[in-house]
Length: 122
Image 1: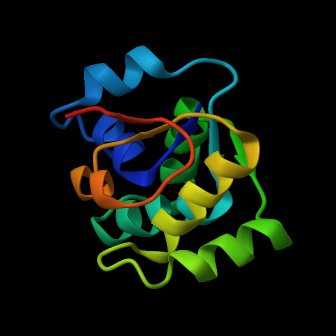
Image 2 (image 1 turned 180 degrees about the vertical axis):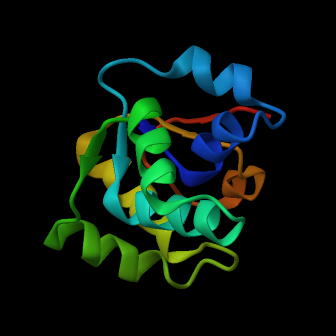
């Protein structure tokens, strides 16, 4: 499964949906490096030490996937969808490229044309 930033942040911050996200997490779970950067940025902006934030994130999801040219093309296509951040678009592109379900807390994704299953944690 591919995890969106919102699902990882729910786990890190014990937010609603964290239990659902943890239930879906396994050793094959993957995170886009773009999402990892977004998560780390949010953690540090909230006062976390960068090294501690990195260790916490790696503890939850240790497999990070670099973006590809194919994913960049899909990210560009998704640029017309209102409310999708760059990290959202890279997450969707990664899930589609791998043919794997995506785990997110972002309910507005229900209106986004995504070719793989999306599992909502709340």
